[in-house]
Amino acid sequence: MSATLNDVRLKGLKILSEKLDPVEMIQFFQVYENGIGDYTNERKKKYKNIKLEDIRSGISLMKNKKKKVKAD
Image (cartoon, rainbow, N blue to C red):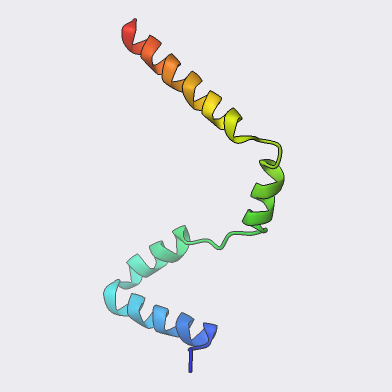
């Protein structure tokens, strides 16, 4: 039987408390944040009109700019 999300959360907290001192645990929680929204759907909407050829062209432009900077 698989663990519930709460079981996993409690197990994670136990492991953290065994490996980190109290100050490190506080620091960990200060930098840890849950994301919000639906990244997958947002990404699909944002990039739905971008074609593979657009990406290739953009990469070529960046490479050419980089070569030009090195040459100067």
